[in-house]
Image (cartoon, rainbow, N blue to C red; front, side):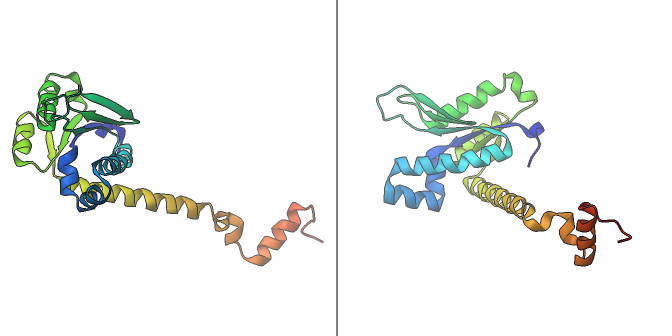
Length: 186
């Protein structure tokens, strides 16, 4: 697992990622946008915890006549933009403000989007850029590592983990006798 020294803030252009990941496109087309958002957030929750990232998933709400809102789920913040504000402008504003933020000295700022114009803009503000494809690959790799680690831990809890199982049966029998108080001379 990465060390806590690699603390980062990950900004994710939510609808851009949904449109770029084939699996999320299918969920969107079959079950609706809300379900695709939920699956994206679930995928990012485990990844963010594994990487020790504070993640903001930004969704456009520019066509909704509602004020922006935020929901917090562990280390994930789900941001819906204000009326007439795009996810791109929200992300750009966050990058611009981060330049003056003291956290920039011990945090990385990473923006995940496949929007080329957005990529150039955020890099210009000093943020790192990650493509939707790279994010998908990183999420899958993190999930794979976690599963392998869980399997290793489960194997470590098997009966074969005890030292006595590595000793030949005759020696094991003799040790059992000693434990019960029988002397070696008997």
